[in-house]
Length: 200
Ligand SMILES: Cc1cc2nc3c(=O)[nH]c(=O)nc-3n(C[C@H](O)[C@H](O)[C@H](O)COP(=O)(O)O)c2cc1C
Image (cartoon, rainbow, N blue to C red; front, side, top):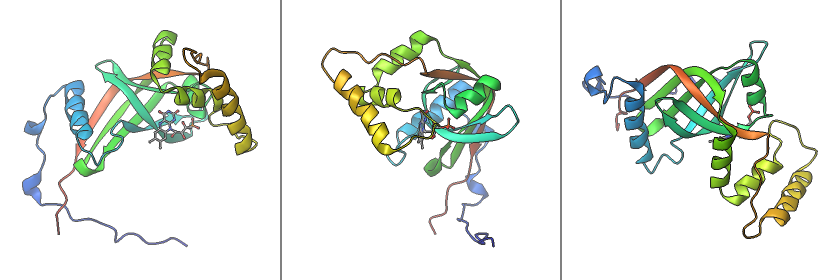
């Protein structure tokens, strides 16, 4: 049985509201992304404007998608950090091609990126790792992403041991070799602007 949700729709404004090419801030993707991203950051309703859905493809050609947080962008690409032993990392090791999508609902905007990933240098990953709050550094060490764990107690125990070892002043949590960053080098960037919603 399939639940029919075909009637779910919202009203959009009419064609007066159309987004035109002349509304683009820049015809070069970095400038346009920066303008839209900064506007998304200015909206208090958007709690994580840097959340992007990242799609990877397995060796056998099966796609999978999940959200990650973009932690830097520029003309050279979009950066994010993760566990190098996670499912996504294994897939990216086998197939560099990825796609990512940002969606800012209240702005009726989405940005789609298609490109390929490269690992960030150890140095850059380490610098970013140590810029995170210490509990997040510990969580990254304790978590074996994408791997089933026997129980929550085992995970909490692992985290507790690391906290006892590292939650003391002037002690640095070493970045685990299995944690670091990537950059998506874009081949294509699409900017999508929908019409504003009708108040009625
Ligand atoms: C809003 C949001 C942000 C997330 N950010 C990250 C991130 O930056 N890095 C990360 O590894 N996982 C992040 N996650 C968790 C991933 O979506 C995912 O569950 C995890 O990375 C395991 O994915 P995988 O098994 O496909 O590798 C985030 C989840 C959400 C909902």
